[in-house]
Length: 327
Image 1 (cartoon, rainbow, N blue to C red):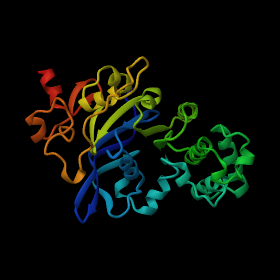
Image 2 (cartoon, helix red, strand yellow):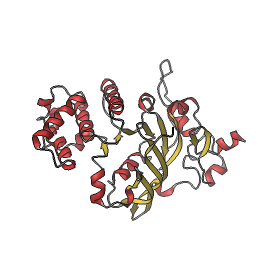
Image 3 (cartoon, rainbow, N blue to C red):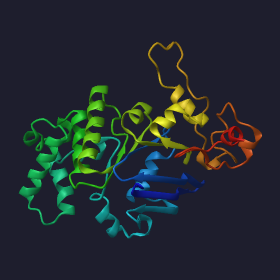
């Protein structure tokens, strides 16, 4: 039976229009998220992961905007909707956990009230008392101890882990069909990270929602994701099911990311790093954007655009070596 696709991004191009030129932060991205699956979007900082998420949510502001492509949620192209129509969907059917909870929560409002407002905006039939009870119940479900007491706390009175759980509660309180989690475990210790990842899987299993998790941590990907998209300089470099990606890595960039993970028993005098830096998006190479850092790069890589090659079932990579190896 074919999986239902809840979100399909095709040819997405999101740019910043600056005085120095057009910056293609997201440059022709295709992503599919099946219903009930957890999909990972990984890559270095500055490669366009968060811009992709903000494009989905309609959160790009001047000088940035979606310049091309489509974002279809349950068959509806979000890029064609007016702001009022988009607000009905975003927050209720699509929710987002932002990268840093301390800057995402209003410091002068109690956390319970902030989550309650999210619920009331999308369900006007609820009374404030009913909304409060649902928020407390959601606090309890996401593992916040003494939820009645925490409801009246200000953000600065909570630990980083509890603030992150408040953000998850805010995103989950309207029972969304799609949850976008942008670096949900950044700056958290490993025990809290494990708890939050386990919580997201449990909520997925209970509600059947889909999850797009944005991270640079391949350990998180291995722990929670069903499928993975590897992004670099605004483009998808490789995509595959999680086990396939780890077992049969095809793109040199993905190999570099995996090689930079510290391993038990490894000589730690010098950890592996990918040489060079992410290219300036105003002056991208003519060919493969990774060619300036790739040990396998040839003149063809530097001068010709690279398509996505099929490596195996549900596995594609944007590298000429895939074509050569197949031949």
